[in-house]
Length: 414
Image 1 (tube, rainbow, N blue to C red):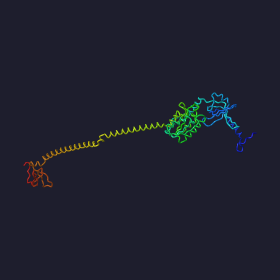
Image 2 (cartoon, rainbow, N blue to C red):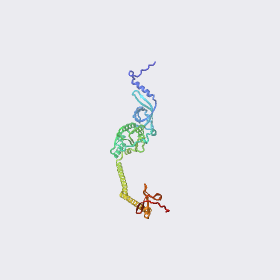
Image 3 (cartoon, rainbow, N blue to C red):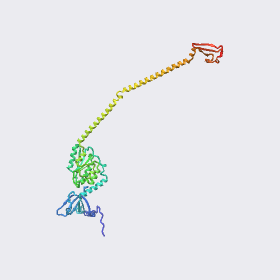
Image 4 (cartoon, helix red, strand yellow):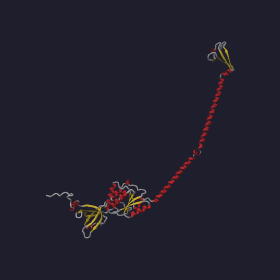
């Protein structure tokens, strides 16, 4: 009957050999695997049947030890050198005696240019589908950046070109330098770390990532997905200045501005002071000319208004209206005088007719007017029926009147 081992505890700890054996058992269960990476060290020890290599992840600061038969390296169709991208096939081995892990490989295949370009195209399609290349995400560069972050190789020509050209164009520009490896397995982690530091710096207003030209393998870090996503996540505008005009890593598509060369990046970031001063002078001259033209135009309008009679001789309008008023007054006076003359003539004619038809003229011809005055209301007598003997009457003639008493009445027959 087999006894059950006591559980691991502080009272029953495992010895190192037991732990290493258990780790080795778990790792050996993984079996054969394919792994991709970049060779950073190749050590062929003379007189031994084992070659030691180091395989590094191109996007992270991680590495793995490899072991293989030296003949495997010699049989490679392409010479293997440090920095080469490879795909290896092997089984993980854990050595309990040293507590180390390595990958015993039986096949190694260099990654060709075609495979690298195909991988870049796959990354391009993936990021393009996510919208990381959309022009609406691009941010405008500041007009006069006081501090520019520059990520480049230590003492590289790209670094010197950017600083020299930018300083010559705008002397007050300052640079925050970040010197990193720009190729090889450590390039991407270093660039990403420094990119984040510059993006977090509130004084840095724009970041330039610069490198000279190179082969497709040399420029691979600038098409790495980790770096591209880090650039897309930056809050600070990023300028890609990688290589020369034919070089087109994917960083050019993700960055806010793509510069053909490091010199072109410096020109885009730092405006040329002479050109800006000349532009200012041109704008000042144009604005002054436009202002003078506007003043002259308005002066002509004012002169035209002042030359009008109503403003040149304002009393002329009053004089003209006074003449009209005087003419109307004369017409009115003449019309009234005419109407008065006509009315006077009519009155004279009516007066003459009235005088002719009136009693005075009749009395002057020898007639008399008899009025009975003994009644309550004196009245003229026009018939004998209105008289009676003894009635008192007043007889009016042309030159006076007399009172009389009716003695008797005589009809017209008598």
